[in-house]
Image 1 (cartoon, helix red, strand yellow):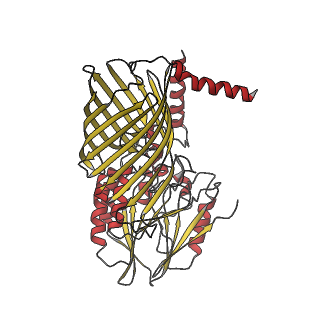
Image 2 (spheres, one colour):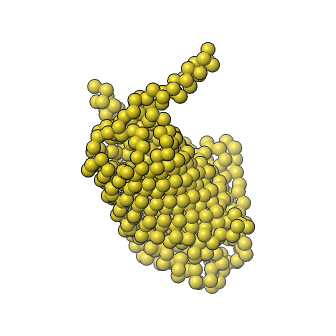
Image 3 (tube, chains in turn cyan, brown):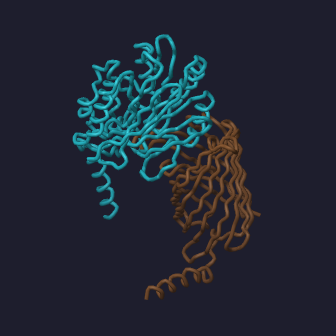
Length: 295
Length: 239
């Protein structure tokens, strides 16, 4: 009898989690991804990248600002910090760019609330927010919703001053805690080619952080150890300057094999220690952190 | 009253091993050596093979030492030393796990050094271990005057829950296990490994061992996908 009650309770829990209109826990996804895997997402992203060509931003001068935030976890009720970040960014003087390091939304059906904050279709050089895919963005098979808005989860772009190449930025899809075979091969080829093209520096941005230094945030899983060894070695080998990521919700800075690994605080409302970063990219990189206003 | 209760609990705890009934399968004091071959695949290292050698050295009824070596065709070499104080209880065995695991990741020219401390309890059908471990990863080419090529992950939880189909003294057994550690790796706490194992005692000296292991990634991203798998076979010779 006890056994049947346990099975019934577990079944009800899984069913409720799946059928809840705005469920936050994709129970089935814990055991097997409900959407396409990283290899499929990468192929779809590459097909889109090829169809639109290379992405270059002419900054008009050598020095410019990048506004960077992570883990906004937008829901119907919680998007105050993200509103603030976008307002700061839009009001800032050019030249500038903005990056979001994943987990734009929190859970099921939350993209509708993000639509009023991030203007996907009307992005211009004055209002460009470039994103990387977070694990929360693809719960409950939401990859198609993400893709309909942002088109790609793995891409690169560079900043230029006229014909002068400034910095190269590479976005990686790490929403499942791994890059997959195809994206890893693409990254190797890209780094081998681009590291010879005379960029000032190469920045990689992705959602999942590589090191498990902080355990204060509970269940923020990482890459498998083998992937950590391989990826950090690869990034060091090709002289990547910095890796920016989120996921952990706790700021962190590590230097390893000549590469700087920066993890950002969350932008999520109602969480302690929220902040965003402004990186001034010139001859050096000056990273400054700004707290969100207290609520 | 509290002091008396505490005294009573401690007295029982330390007295139990003295009166423990010696059961076959527990507290075996024979030296043994194990050899295994493994086929392994993961999306990072692709297909590779491993060759494992292990030696168990029971020093006295309450203390044993185990050493393990693994040579991988992925150009990774692992050595493990385990010191295991243990106490026979009427219904099983209580043990303290102290492990040092060193991995030379030659393909990436780096070291991974892990030290663990755990406590475990093993009965006929269930074995549970819980502990903590720390890790230091360092570049082979690091300058000792810089902290740039050295990363310490100070705190991780170690867990291992294993269930057996038969009692420990049975000549054959099947086991199923969930853990974030196996003989040659200590994964971060949110990176579980799922393992199945079997043994068959051919005679009093020889034991055949079989095992399989699956490593998903992203389970606690709630978007899990397959990362790697291992199949192993080998033998143990008990002297």
